[in-house]
Length: 548
Image 1: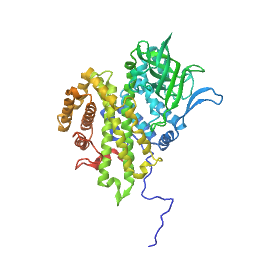
Image 2 (image 1 turned 180 degrees about the horizontal axis):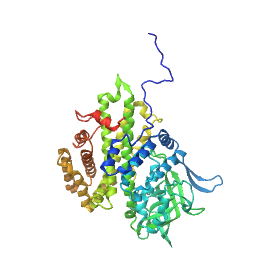
Image 3 (image 1 turned 90 degrees about the vertical axis):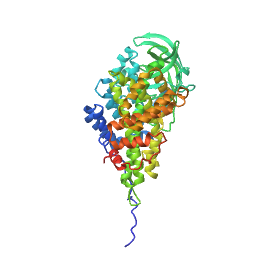
């Protein structure tokens, strides 16, 4: 038989990009979550959104927005200071979709299960691209803080909740929709915002309340192209929260001067900046000296989005790995059919399901908090635990998924390097791991009823599972050791996260999934991917994660 030379324009045994799929329909955890957490009325809308997110052109916009990051133009060609940030059109298309689909507004529209539906949208939108979600999150999260000043909330909420994305750089009163940013940290303090030195000088009053002149800087001002910023500054009576407009009036910019855009390793489509305030106008939100207590309402929601988007990133890396392994053959059979690879893929899928159900449970608690004190207390713990644990899981998970793709997974033309660069971001933003752990201890000390509400969610299944029961015992023993509690607070965080994830999987997933999670995660040792217990039904877990 003559030797046949392979055609140079035809590749054999290679994968193709995952495009044109429905992110909702092919995610069993989301579909089942609609039933578990009373979100059935949202299914049609979420299916349409899942189809939009999975389109090839939508995913391509995510790629372009990161390949061509924003640029800062401080002056025009005449020498006028303009501080204008220019984005690739793909970024604007993504943020327009975010706003049109109500991710910034739905929980404030008093709809049943709106937090749940929005969390599912955020989870899917993040799988397209994470950077543009930052200004969307801050716009969504600004509402509860603005309501500390009813006059401002009444004036601005119609524009904030508008489904129209208006990127024009002009006075807020002439715009159809508004975007919010946030500036808390400074060079000398970082997360220790009480070390802030930026000053707020009283300037009188108007119909919106007390006016101040802000002098100082912010080392990280997120989304500096926004129409308004919530910032912290030192007023005469202490650290306070202020609302700062980008424009003071028609044709008059506020005295906010962008020094540089941050050259970040990930989240590159999103503009993060270092700024100076040279007498910028701002209004007081809440009481003087109560800045942290006022802005924490916003931070609780941004941290919620960090944990939801982390679950989304874990999901995307999981499906990228499984999709590839369904196509690629080695040593005579598909990768997905090889025993050792099945172990890795099943383990990735297991981590993804545990992260997703945790995020949906927290979203459900947000939906219930206004009329259910137990759920309100549960949230005090669950948000910090989820922010810590889910965000921490993303980097290692993404790397393992990348390895499943081999050399193709490290090519910059694929999605995986972008996911890998994005992986550590959520753990650092909105309070890094140690901040979450210390916040947990403060909540436990001041609100013991919050810990009780959280643990009660786990105790329901502890009697049925010895590993969950043992995990609860470790938590109790750690909390009783007051002398070492601060140094061991990360261990407490981890056990709290694993205990809730296990209880949720026992309650809502297949028994094979729950058993595999408990036996691989609750024994107290460090977990490595691909070492699930002997006898685990890996094929079932892979099929559940990617029912193609």
